[in-house]
Image (tube, rainbow, N blue to C red):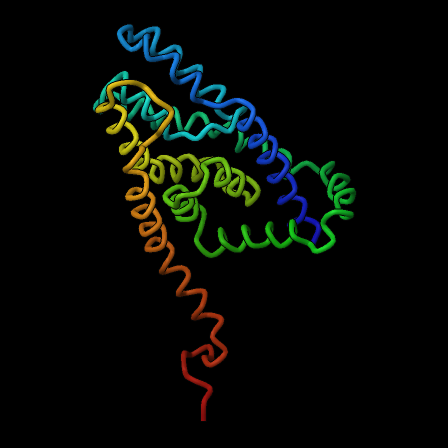
Length: 242
Protein backbone atom coordinates (compact mmCIF):
# COMPACT_ATOMS: atom_id res chain seq x y z
CA UNK A 1 0.00 0.00 0.00
CA UNK A 2 1.59 3.26 -1.18
CA UNK A 3 0.05 5.52 1.48
CA UNK A 4 1.48 3.57 4.41
CA UNK A 5 4.94 3.52 2.88
CA UNK A 6 4.75 7.21 1.96
CA UNK A 7 3.81 8.26 5.45
CA UNK A 8 6.49 6.09 7.02
CA UNK A 9 9.09 7.49 4.62
CA UNK A 10 8.13 11.07 5.48
CA UNK A 11 8.53 10.38 9.19
CA UNK A 12 11.76 8.47 8.65
CA UNK A 13 13.31 11.27 6.60
CA UNK A 14 12.55 13.91 9.21
CA UNK A 15 13.56 11.73 12.17
CA UNK A 16 16.84 10.71 10.50
CA UNK A 17 17.73 14.32 9.77
CA UNK A 18 17.10 15.36 13.36
CA UNK A 19 19.12 12.47 14.76
CA UNK A 20 22.04 13.37 12.51
CA UNK A 21 21.89 16.99 13.64
CA UNK A 22 21.69 15.94 17.28
CA UNK A 23 24.83 13.84 16.91
CA UNK A 24 26.72 16.81 15.51
CA UNK A 25 25.56 19.35 18.10
CA UNK A 26 25.48 18.18 21.72
CA UNK A 27 23.25 20.01 24.23
CA UNK A 28 25.94 19.79 26.93
CA UNK A 29 27.87 22.88 25.84
CA UNK A 30 24.78 25.03 25.34
CA UNK A 31 23.18 24.01 28.63
CA UNK A 32 26.39 24.47 30.57
CA UNK A 33 26.60 28.05 29.33
CA UNK A 34 23.33 29.07 31.03
CA UNK A 35 24.65 28.30 34.52
CA UNK A 36 26.05 31.80 34.98
CA UNK A 37 22.74 33.37 33.90
CA UNK A 38 20.57 31.77 36.59
CA UNK A 39 20.84 34.86 38.79
CA UNK A 40 19.20 36.99 36.09
CA UNK A 41 15.68 35.62 35.48
CA UNK A 42 15.14 37.67 32.31
CA UNK A 43 18.40 36.70 30.60
CA UNK A 44 18.00 33.12 31.78
CA UNK A 45 14.47 32.99 30.37
CA UNK A 46 15.56 34.35 26.99
CA UNK A 47 18.37 31.79 26.71
CA UNK A 48 16.11 28.91 27.74
CA UNK A 49 13.50 30.05 25.20
CA UNK A 50 16.21 30.03 22.55
CA UNK A 51 17.25 26.50 23.54
CA UNK A 52 13.66 25.30 23.22
CA UNK A 53 13.34 26.95 19.81
CA UNK A 54 16.43 25.24 18.37
CA UNK A 55 15.71 21.90 20.04
CA UNK A 56 13.55 20.54 17.18
CA UNK A 57 16.31 21.25 14.67
CA UNK A 58 18.94 19.44 16.73
CA UNK A 59 16.80 16.58 18.10
CA UNK A 60 17.79 17.33 21.69
CA UNK A 61 15.80 15.45 24.34
CA UNK A 62 13.28 17.49 26.28
CA UNK A 63 14.11 16.33 29.82
CA UNK A 64 17.51 18.07 30.09
CA UNK A 65 15.88 21.35 29.12
CA UNK A 66 13.17 20.81 31.75
CA UNK A 67 15.90 20.18 34.33
CA UNK A 68 17.56 23.47 33.36
CA UNK A 69 14.22 25.26 33.77
CA UNK A 70 13.86 23.74 37.23
CA UNK A 71 17.40 24.83 38.09
CA UNK A 72 16.64 28.44 37.21
CA UNK A 73 13.00 28.84 38.28
CA UNK A 74 12.31 26.15 40.87
CA UNK A 75 9.44 23.68 40.90
CA UNK A 76 6.39 25.95 41.19
CA UNK A 77 7.27 28.11 38.19
CA UNK A 78 9.45 25.58 36.42
CA UNK A 79 6.82 22.89 35.83
CA UNK A 80 4.35 25.04 33.82
CA UNK A 81 7.18 26.79 31.97
CA UNK A 82 8.90 23.53 31.03
CA UNK A 83 5.63 21.85 30.05
CA UNK A 84 4.73 24.80 27.82
CA UNK A 85 8.19 24.58 26.31
CA UNK A 86 7.72 20.90 25.48
CA UNK A 87 4.33 21.46 23.86
CA UNK A 88 5.56 24.38 21.78
CA UNK A 89 8.81 22.71 20.73
CA UNK A 90 7.14 19.60 19.28
CA UNK A 91 4.77 21.62 17.09
CA UNK A 92 7.20 22.35 14.22
CA UNK A 93 8.05 18.66 13.87
CA UNK A 94 4.39 17.64 13.95
CA UNK A 95 3.44 20.20 11.31
CA UNK A 96 6.44 19.45 9.07
CA UNK A 97 5.96 15.67 9.12
CA UNK A 98 2.21 16.01 8.64
CA UNK A 99 2.78 18.25 5.63
CA UNK A 100 5.32 15.86 4.10
CA UNK A 101 3.07 12.86 4.70
CA UNK A 102 0.14 14.58 3.04
CA UNK A 103 2.08 16.00 0.11
CA UNK A 104 1.38 14.07 -3.08
CA UNK A 105 4.91 14.80 -4.27
CA UNK A 106 6.22 12.34 -1.70
CA UNK A 107 4.91 9.57 -3.96
CA UNK A 108 7.86 10.27 -6.24
CA UNK A 109 10.25 9.94 -3.31
CA UNK A 110 8.56 6.72 -2.31
CA UNK A 111 8.96 5.25 -5.78
CA UNK A 112 12.64 6.14 -5.74
CA UNK A 113 13.03 4.43 -2.37
CA UNK A 114 11.86 1.05 -3.65
CA UNK A 115 15.41 0.07 -4.45
CA UNK A 116 16.43 0.08 -0.79
CA UNK A 117 13.08 -0.89 0.68
CA UNK A 118 12.45 -4.08 -1.25
CA UNK A 119 11.26 -5.84 1.91
CA UNK A 120 8.56 -3.21 2.49
CA UNK A 121 9.91 -2.16 5.90
CA UNK A 122 8.59 1.38 5.56
CA UNK A 123 5.18 0.18 4.49
CA UNK A 124 4.96 -2.21 7.43
CA UNK A 125 6.14 0.50 9.81
CA UNK A 126 3.52 2.92 8.52
CA UNK A 127 0.78 0.31 8.75
CA UNK A 128 1.85 -0.64 12.30
CA UNK A 129 1.69 2.97 13.46
CA UNK A 130 -1.69 3.39 11.80
CA UNK A 131 -3.07 0.26 13.51
CA UNK A 132 -1.73 1.47 16.84
CA UNK A 133 -3.66 4.74 16.66
CA UNK A 134 -6.72 3.02 15.23
CA UNK A 135 -6.76 0.67 18.22
CA UNK A 136 -5.78 3.09 20.98
CA UNK A 137 -7.54 6.19 19.68
CA UNK A 138 -5.83 9.56 19.09
CA UNK A 139 -5.79 10.92 22.64
CA UNK A 140 -4.99 7.66 24.42
CA UNK A 141 -2.41 6.84 21.76
CA UNK A 142 -0.55 10.13 22.13
CA UNK A 143 -0.62 10.01 25.94
CA UNK A 144 0.72 6.45 26.00
CA UNK A 145 3.47 7.26 23.49
CA UNK A 146 4.56 10.18 25.68
CA UNK A 147 4.52 8.15 28.88
CA UNK A 148 6.58 5.35 27.34
CA UNK A 149 10.37 5.85 27.47
CA UNK A 150 10.82 6.48 23.76
CA UNK A 151 12.32 9.61 22.14
CA UNK A 152 9.86 12.48 22.11
CA UNK A 153 10.43 13.29 18.45
CA UNK A 154 9.80 9.70 17.40
CA UNK A 155 6.39 9.84 19.12
CA UNK A 156 5.71 13.16 17.41
CA UNK A 157 6.51 11.78 13.95
CA UNK A 158 4.32 8.74 14.56
CA UNK A 159 1.35 10.91 15.54
CA UNK A 160 1.87 13.21 12.57
CA UNK A 161 1.88 10.45 9.95
CA UNK A 162 -1.24 8.91 11.53
CA UNK A 163 -3.41 11.99 10.95
CA UNK A 164 -3.87 12.69 14.66
CA UNK A 165 -5.62 16.04 14.98
CA UNK A 166 -3.69 18.99 16.37
CA UNK A 167 -6.05 19.28 19.34
CA UNK A 168 -5.59 15.69 20.49
CA UNK A 169 -1.88 15.88 19.82
CA UNK A 170 -1.44 18.95 22.04
CA UNK A 171 -3.65 17.63 24.84
CA UNK A 172 -2.08 14.17 24.74
CA UNK A 173 1.43 15.63 24.72
CA UNK A 174 0.72 17.83 27.74
CA UNK A 175 -0.78 14.96 29.73
CA UNK A 176 1.80 12.36 28.76
CA UNK A 177 4.83 14.61 29.21
CA UNK A 178 3.69 15.93 32.61
CA UNK A 179 5.29 13.15 34.75
CA UNK A 180 8.59 13.41 32.88
CA UNK A 181 8.53 17.19 33.16
CA UNK A 182 7.82 17.17 36.88
CA UNK A 183 10.62 14.67 37.52
CA UNK A 184 13.13 16.66 35.46
CA UNK A 185 12.17 20.00 37.02
CA UNK A 186 12.42 18.59 40.54
CA UNK A 187 15.86 17.15 39.80
CA UNK A 188 16.97 20.42 38.23
CA UNK A 189 15.68 22.48 41.15
CA UNK A 190 17.73 20.42 43.58
CA UNK A 191 20.91 20.48 41.47
CA UNK A 192 23.92 22.58 42.37
CA UNK A 193 24.62 23.45 38.75
CA UNK A 194 22.88 23.22 35.41
CA UNK A 195 23.83 20.10 33.44
CA UNK A 196 22.62 18.17 30.42
CA UNK A 197 22.13 15.04 32.50
CA UNK A 198 18.34 15.25 32.55
CA UNK A 199 16.78 13.28 35.40
CA UNK A 200 19.99 11.40 36.20
CA UNK A 201 19.69 8.51 38.63
CA UNK A 202 15.91 8.91 38.76
CA UNK A 203 15.71 8.08 35.05
CA UNK A 204 15.30 4.33 35.46
CA UNK A 205 12.50 4.64 38.01
CA UNK A 206 10.66 7.24 35.91
CA UNK A 207 11.14 5.15 32.76
CA UNK A 208 9.71 2.04 34.40
CA UNK A 209 6.81 4.00 35.86
CA UNK A 210 6.07 5.59 32.49
CA UNK A 211 6.22 2.23 30.71
CA UNK A 212 3.86 0.68 33.27
CA UNK A 213 1.43 3.59 32.96
CA UNK A 214 1.50 3.32 29.15
CA UNK A 215 0.82 -0.43 29.32
CA UNK A 216 -2.11 0.08 31.70
CA UNK A 217 -3.50 2.80 29.47
CA UNK A 218 -3.36 0.57 26.41
CA UNK A 219 -4.54 -2.62 28.13
CA UNK A 220 -8.26 -2.12 27.52
CA UNK A 221 -8.14 -1.24 23.79
CA UNK A 222 -5.60 -4.03 23.23
CA UNK A 223 -7.91 -6.51 24.96
CA UNK A 224 -10.89 -5.37 22.89
CA UNK A 225 -8.89 -5.76 19.69
CA UNK A 226 -7.67 -9.23 20.58
CA UNK A 227 -11.17 -10.28 21.66
CA UNK A 228 -12.70 -9.04 18.39
CA UNK A 229 -10.20 -11.11 16.42
CA UNK A 230 -10.83 -14.31 18.39
CA UNK A 231 -11.93 -16.89 15.79
CA UNK A 232 -13.64 -18.96 18.49
CA UNK A 233 -16.25 -16.30 19.10
CA UNK A 234 -19.21 -15.36 16.96
CA UNK A 235 -21.08 -12.10 16.83
CA UNK A 236 -23.26 -13.00 19.85
CA UNK A 237 -20.24 -13.90 21.95
CA UNK A 238 -20.85 -17.66 21.86
CA UNK A 239 -18.02 -20.13 21.29
CA UNK A 240 -18.02 -22.02 18.00
CA UNK A 241 -16.71 -25.19 19.70
CA UNK A 242 -19.09 -28.21 19.62
